[in-house]
Length: 226
DNA sequence: GCGACAG
DNA sequence: ATCTTGTCGC
Image (cartoon, rainbow, N blue to C red):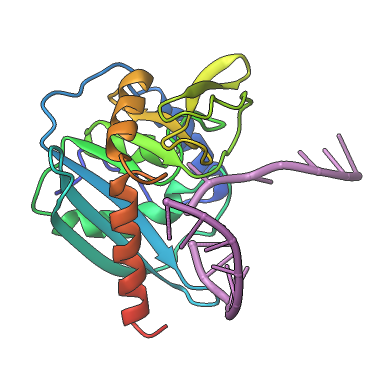
C-alpha cells in the first residue's frame, strides 16, 4: 500500500507542530466506515540504547478475529520521542511496513491516541489520513483530558474531555480491569470506534489487533539479536 | 516556575 | 517503550 498524501519527514519540532495543525483540519469525525472485512493493528517495538526499532502490521478477519496477514520491518530511529509528536517517530517505519502489506484493511487500530491530542492529531489521525482509511486510536494510558472512572462492567465508558470538548472515551473492555483510552483517528465516529474496540476485545483488556501485532514485533525484535 | 507528558 | 522475579489467581 502507498499513502494518498505526502509531506516531508525531516522536520524540526516546530515544523512538525505546524504540519499537525494543518493536517488536523482534514480529519473526519463522521463514519466513513463501510463493510469491514479486514482490520489492521499497527505497532512499533524499541530497544533501549539501540537506534533500531521494529514496526509491524497484523490484519485480522473482522468476523473471526483470526490473523490473515502480518508484516514486520526494522528501521533506525529518525525522530526522538516527544509527547505530542509521537507519529513522527513511528510513522516512517510503519510506512515501510504498509509498503509490504498486500491486504487492504477497511479499518486500522493504533496503539496511542487519535484526536485526544493537544492539536487533535495523534498517531491514529495521522495514519488514517495518510492512507485515507478509517482509523481508531486505542491507548493504554492518557495523553491529556479529564474523565470520571467508568462503571466496572464490560462496555462501560465515560467521556474524555479537553477544554470542554469530548476528545475520546475511557472504555472498560473487561469487567474490573483498567479501562483503555479510545479516540477517533479519522473517518469514524466515537460511538462506532467504541463498538469496534469492544468487539475486538472479547477476552482481554486490549483489542486483539493490538495484542497480535504487539507479540509479533516483540518476537521479531528478540530474533534480531536482543 | 512546577507538574504532566501516547510509546 | 524498556529495565525486571516472583507471585497470586483462573
